[in-house]
Amino acid sequence: MTPRVPTIGVFDSGVGGLTVLGALLTQASAADYLYLGDTARLPYGSKSRATVARYAVSSARFLVAQGAEALVIACNTASALALDALRAAVDVPVIGVIETGATAALQSSETGDVMVIATAATVESHAYSAACRERGLRAIEKACPLLVPLVEEGWIEHPVTREIVGIYLDDLLSHAAAAGMTADTLVLGCTHYPLLRGVIDATLRERDSGPAVRVIDSAQVTAEQVVVRLALESSAQREPAVRFYATDSVEKFRTLGTRFLGRTIDGVELIDLGG
Amino acid sequence: MTPRVPTIGVFDSGVGGLTVLGALLTQASAADYLYLGDTARLPYGSKSRATVARYAVSSARFLVAQGAEALVIACNTASALALDALRAAVDVPVIGVIETGATAALQSSETGDVMVIATAATVESHAYSAACRERGLRAIEKACPLLVPLVEEGWIEHPVTREIVGIYLDDLLSHAAAAGMTADTLVLGCTHYPLLRGVIDATLRERDSGPAVRVIDSAQVTAEQVVVRLALESSAQREPAVRFYATDSVEKFRTLGTRFLGRTIDGVELIDLGG
Image (cartoon, rainbow over all chains, first blue to last red):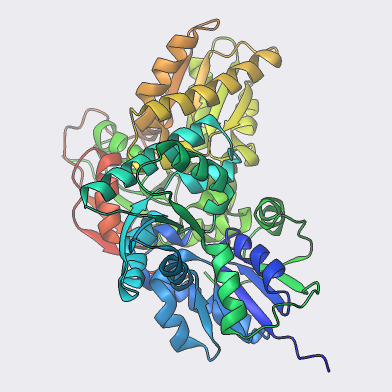
């Protein structure tokens, strides 16, 4: 007897969450997926908690109405600012990338000291610090507002990108040292950052300060935890069905999104959530 | 007898338009001002024409309802994508920064060849090319998506900013040369770019390719043309009254906005335009 395959809704303000969907399609293939990019209202990163919660709740309700039986909030800003509002608004399990990142940091860190890089809004919310503290970890956070536009410019291996990543990580490492921390784990607290994984790994190797730093890619660890929390068949070798929705320019979603998902996207449906 | 002082509404998706307001307060002081930053829905630069038009029209109607007798669209994206929709929606004169920039380019250029740097959305609209063509100019455009986040990061005189400005301008100059153009004018087609004027001027001086390139700051030239088109007293030495409205986080508007306006902002009113 073939077990029933659940439908999981994945939500982000834009295309960044497609790195999470990509990991889910590979590692959690015993499910079908709906992906919504709220591209008309992105970026959430510069907006207030009330506004982000309003946008996220309307997006979550849409996905549940389309049949989602669980939601993955693949948007760090929405996970930081709106997780409680989302859990109050819908009646299905809600998994946010900040909780999964902090849980993976706990499994990774031997010193208990963790570094997080993210957008300005995620850092200002201190949601990673709070999630790490709940797990007995100390965290230091650093806002890296230039990394998202560098990824969207496509300057993935560009010398300027290496320079900017170096400036950000040097600043973070020196603040961690000044705080007396022996950080051995770096959480990529933004769904765009996995595309810069190569530059980030190389920069950390060059710095070589203290213990080797392990990098937590929240897309990967979210997929792993979805399998566990939703009790999916982890061995299933199937091609999940995926439907894509965007609130603005499906053409741009398709073009930019392909880079994030790592495979061709076709058939994006334009929807209107108001606003 | 003191002439009646008109109220002018200035509109942008965020704080960038405050560079235009700053020029107006100095050069067009025979008016009072309302400034609206639609910060809950910024940036417009990544959104479609239909969405930008919808947002801009609701913002314009708000300003007219507050008493604006003329509107300055201090947002290149809205000027590029929504000027016709705005003129159809409200019954007051509407002045957009793209028209004023192209008119100033016509006054500046001796060769008739003009370069424009702007956001991706403004360039994709080709609104500057069209406005230049109407004035008998040839224009070449270049999208510079990293410059806005660099300004918002506060890296105004940073070596990385000089490097990125160098990469963008070298690319533009070589494309202009390849197209057989002798460009002598560069239009700053984004309200954030005046803050990078020093780096841009220095980069152009270093390159020294052909005739000296004159830089058109669309904030300055818009203020000059507002005085003419609205027949304001240009000699009036008065302190205009200003009211500020934002659709999200008035605190962030105040903090970031002060850098753009060049003076302290207090008393920002939070308004809700829906969405």
